[in-house]
Image (cartoon, rainbow over all chains, first blue to last red; front, side, top):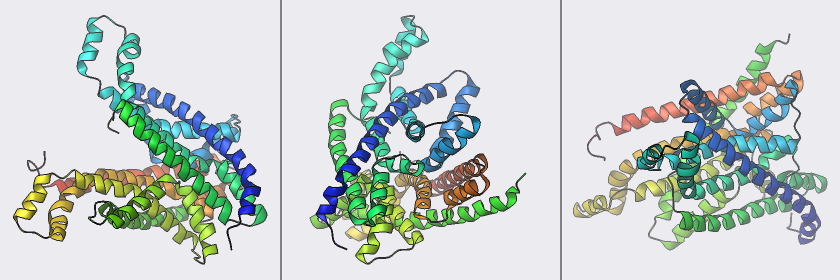
Length: 219
Length: 219
């Protein structure tokens, strides 16, 4: 079977529709992952032992099981207990929760890297716990972790094709549907691959710049 | 009440396929990791470029796209693979690319004095790598290899989408046959987590075993 440029132009508009959803899911998922990760990282440091342990175990569990199965769980099991989610919302929640457990480790490393003296200074200045976090610790901890966080957001971007399994019409699903309509697989699947490769290569350049700008933090 | 034991055995049949995929995929990934990781450190520019291209390509596109490419597009190029072969190929090559960077990093982390000692002892390049550098680098690689193996285990769930009857695939069958969603998905989540735990603990045991007798030698 030969590569057909006419066919490529014919399917391009459909694929671009998919690209939009892919990017939307990545952006929303990234925001959720950043928030969830911070929540988990702070929860694990809670003085309440049981809470800290519980959150630690849940995070460990989510990280040890496949995203695809979690997506199925959110999409198929939650409606049984009365929570109906649209495919895209379910997908974004899945991505955000899954990658939140990864970004939690980045936050943990970032927070651990803030020198002890800063904590002691905050205490000496009689700052409350809340003030200590928002005014002293997090502003110092977050900039060095930006490259590592960005790294996980790129990884998440590459996982978005999984959302096609729960019927989100993102790029992969659009490609599959045009492939099934015309029974030509070469062009759609190759274009999907090329698209992801292109974005990833751009992302790598962006990441190098971020690393240069903010320095590295151990992942 | 439905008889769950029959459905459970269906899921366990899928678990066997998942374990097979994980073991074979890991074996391929290990080989690729060393080939590409050492290739990037080669004296020959051609080999270095080849290895870099392989690593960037497989890290830049997602496992999902690679799997679809192997299963749907390669047949048009005259290479027909069974779902299991396509799965092992895609998983092994994908995770191998990530692990190759681990190999490279670990080898670069070995001090210069080790190479100088090799030259002083008149060892050939091959002897130096085989007897001095790699045995020391292996210990550095091991924990990250464990993480990579867990990533591979989690990625095996994606093969269910190319109709390979792994654990996730069987869970979906149970879902469509019984209409119950909680039982199949909760079961496989627990099983995946259990497999991940097994990998974690065996890597830890291996690490202790390999680090034996090195106290005081490594800092």
